[in-house]
Image (cartoon, rainbow, N blue to C red; front, side):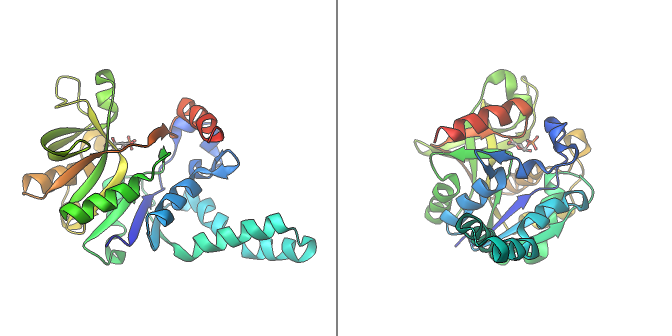
Length: 271
Ligand code: G1P
């Protein structure tokens, strides 16, 4: 059973400057709702019971968003506005399921994952990258089903333009299990076009095994001097762990760049 999810939120968001100079990118509104709430709703709908937010001192604003009880209570007492009461109840529902941990140095996604080590209870957990929204189909829910069926780690996959491979983690696929699920032979973080084993990219949804923590503990920095989760996954695969790439059926929205954020907001408003 997958009951816990983790979300790395300590990233600086430089691709969204100037918006992120004073604001957490994950709280930027998309059709009147912070991006992070879409991710939380995906988790809740997929049956997740606890979500671990990895934030930093610079991004305390994210915690404040869920811990503004005093403010809400005062306003509600004064105004009794049903809309505000409803919004506050929603925030309370989220707050109950979120735990905060800190990653104060931006050393990479792998390092962020390591910060959650002592809180992960089961053998597998879900990770969602908040820059990647997937709409029209709950990708986490589909991946949990695949995990149950194959008792394996699962990662989201999407075909990308061959020219853009150096932006992504890229899979080397092996056996086809079904039309949308493949056993992975290898995964390479941000390869050059000539190094890339395919045009199938990692998208930010992962069902990872608890044993990844022991890999991360000894892991050297990789591309760009960061500790990448992709490198730990590669090492597990080389040691014989089974990973499945799941070609999801929803629509992918990139919210991490300015252009992507603008386009994603427009797409979401059409839903
Ligand atoms: C991260 C991962 C990469 C993956 C991508 C998906 O990269 O390291 O493997 O393909 O997310 O969005 P980042 O976006 O942090 O550069």
